[in-house]
Amino acid sequence: MKQRLKRLFPEVCNGWSELSGYHRFERLVSLVLAIAIGGAVLVAMYHLVIHVVELLFIQSRDPFDYRVFQALFDMILTVLIAMEFNNSIIRTMTSGKGFIHVEIVVLIAIMALVRKFMVLEMETVDPWQIGALAAAVLALGGCYWLVRHANCMKDASDD
Image 1 (tube, rainbow, N blue to C red):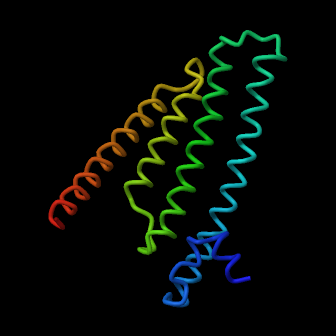
Image 2 (image 1 turned 120 degrees about the vertical axis):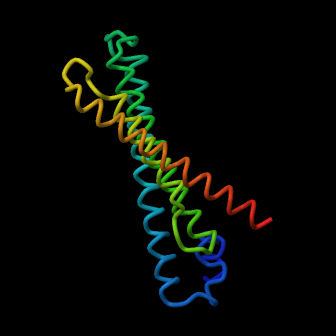
């Protein structure tokens, strides 16, 4: 049984005996989150494939309509955001450091804002909303640059 668990979940089982009670709890929570997000990605991929098949082969709507592309890219970016989030959780389990890097969280937030920009109905949205989203993107871009710069400086000092 133990060997089977090690084969199925090596990220969780590696170094298990050396972990404290809290770190074991943290790994188990990360595993449950990774499985749940993986399930959500599978469901989102299923809906994406069904949508593309309907768009290309079944619907009589114009496939080049911008609203169709908006919906399609909304679904694609949703899957990508979920996969990146899941990847960050799995990396947390395998790194042994026990925390999610700020750089990854900021990148996920930028992807979410890009998704929001892509699905906005430009005819109905207020200009202040676009300005607020643009300010958020600029702030996150600045935050990403600062975090990335700090990480590069830290890596250079470690060498």
